[in-house]
Image 1 (spheres, rainbow over the protein chains, first blue to last red):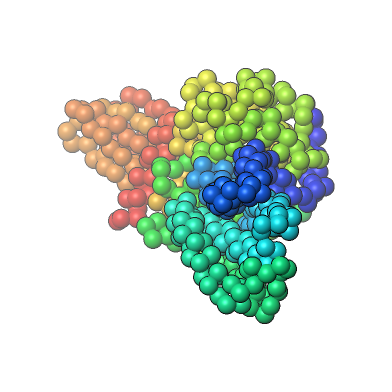
Image 2 (tube, chains in turn cyan, orange):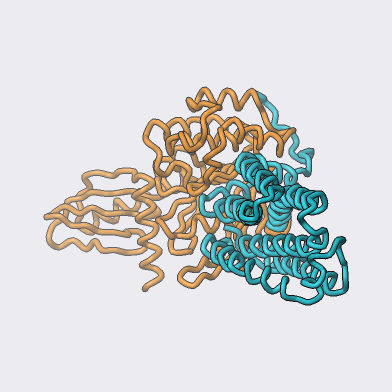
Length: 234
Length: 299
């Protein structure tokens, strides 16, 4: 047993990094399982049967939704419900640093998953002769919508700290995905180029993408603003 | 150099159904303070304010010289905190938690001491938290806190729900920690026995008010229970010193504050025949202090 107390002032300022790694470590196995199913769904997209293609698309979209919901629920709301937050907040961090850690961990996991799936999807679109390359624009806008929805769910989870509210928002945004797909495919600037031999990045597509990115920034900004106003953390 | 482990001056917090009123409290470095109060008295609120987890509406708070909540990260680097409602990650092992804390406190974490505590507490490092009993989980939390040698330990009801054996193990280890004179401890409990065993300074809290705060010996010296036989014409009643009078037949049992030898002579002159003078337990003193304070408030 040591007889002297080490000087804590030399403690590395890497608490945020440790918290991020902690959230990734604790969720790595389910996320890898979702990724495996996601990759399987991409393979289904390459099969010629139209029913299997749609099945693959549904599984792919579901995996993106599930990985996002899983991360937010386990790393944010469950942590509070199961009283792990007291343990975490006893560490040398402020609540804003805690918020940084949660946002970074969730974005790292979700965006890594998303990038792999989107890259695979683009590969499928551009390599499969039966799928028109023009579909890439529609697909990317749809995928960005899923990032925006994930950030919305994450923000609600962090701000509300409530399982119930987070699940309500996940359910509403899930239903809205079908409406968004229907709405997007009905816009002339998108619809008219879905069957094109190469992607058409017209102003309609760029405006929608800009709106999606703006929504993401707004959600994150609001999260930090509201978190900074909180006075009680337990 | 600041010689206080913590200082609270005029600290208050208003909730809808509870308010913490103007708390002035401090603990010298190396001191051990027991915070005693019934459930809902405000012990956890005080502790959460000290930890920067809850903001005070007013007042100044300094912990290890750092203002709270502003410098909570700096202060918490040297605080070890364990509370009754704190839980570790159920799907991770104790070993994983130890590695996690070591990563955060690489210069403070003491592997040798952690191994020693594992043996003392009879814990298995590779066991998942969800497979542990409540007592083992509490001991695991205390191990994680102690093995990084914090300067100030803040313990919010750590022994609640523990069986007598686990409680003794925890108390014994905390007493061993006290051998380090620089270490300060704030220990809240409604179990006065634990507090009496550990603390050298006692603070009573009730309904959000600080009832009294003094060193343990002063409390024990100040209070007595006196049993005496009286005749029908005795003139012994409740006053500033006699806080409680219980009559059974011709026997009176008195609870006396600020006890001195003169009061015995006074009781005799008022028709009493002293039978027995006893020290009171901390629990009895706590109840008497709270009742005296409540009567004082309502009068």
